[in-house]
Image 1: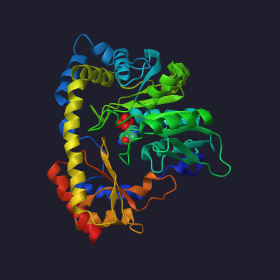
Image 2: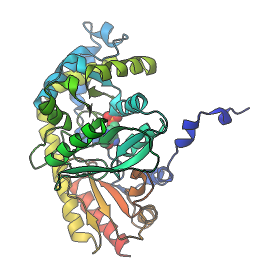
Image 3: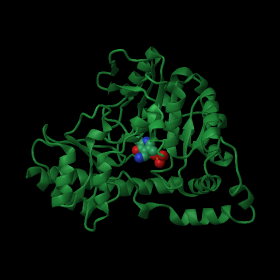
Image 4: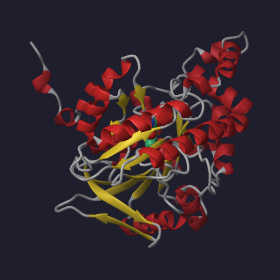
Length: 399
Ligand code: PMP
């Protein structure tokens, strides 16, 4: 007998999207895909990882590499991260860092830590689908966070009868899905709003290292530290990831926050998976120490050229009435097509007629609005393919 009628209420909020069905068609030969926001595997530091795993499995390290380890994470990697965070303006100690299994796990834990059913989470409209999915399991309401750097304003649209606002979530650098960056005034305004609401800020830094032009803007956590002096007084929780820089398959991310937040997340990790894979953390540590400083400039050059190719092709081939973002980094360009054009229908048509794939934007909106938007990723195609694919997409939009 099935037990599915016994599932908890939260299970009914977890839905597979119909887009996934369409994207299964991506395996067909000849498809040009701008769909997945994934790194180009040709750019992985594969030799570095081969050497690192060999060392980790060698006589000196194998006992540690294959053994259980502490929930907080591999100490040398956390030490490297203390230096890395300092290099982007965040002064913290070892005890402020937890290694997670990808930053996705951190988002899940933060949902679990902060959200009781009916609480409010402030998110961008649109926002990262994986964050919505992670938080959604904890049965919150989502309200719209708007940050306007020009006006130096951060606001949210309060819905009727909402619960306490527990946090604001944002990806301030080259967000998924829009590619947009929150400027300095916007970040400061967000901190003002968070102080006013007395809520946490979840800063998703997944794409932070991938800036192709323009000046780096300090993380929200760095700005809050400058205001408050100590990380222990900060409400911002920074989630980092090696997925976009070194390897997503090893599932290594990290969280930086005040000690009470980290301690509670350590308890969650103990209850969920004890710790992230020891050998993966050791390999990431070795590769980061050996080549992070040379690998990142290489990624910036390659992805930056692809971003340029996509923006140029859009300029050349998009019909009037289509607008797009001009990201300074990351992996995404966000298109707004004329109202009435449905992104999901457009995807079905583009796959069928010109074999081009992308992600319809509606899924990134908590209320299912934004149906006339689409997300294009430029990270996993070379410049020629990008030009060809965008030309074909232009044909579909014109038709
Ligand atoms: N945040 C954002 C904005 C992302 O785009 C992604 C991956 N697509 C993640 C977090 C999760 O990445 P990971 O778990 O691999 O670190």
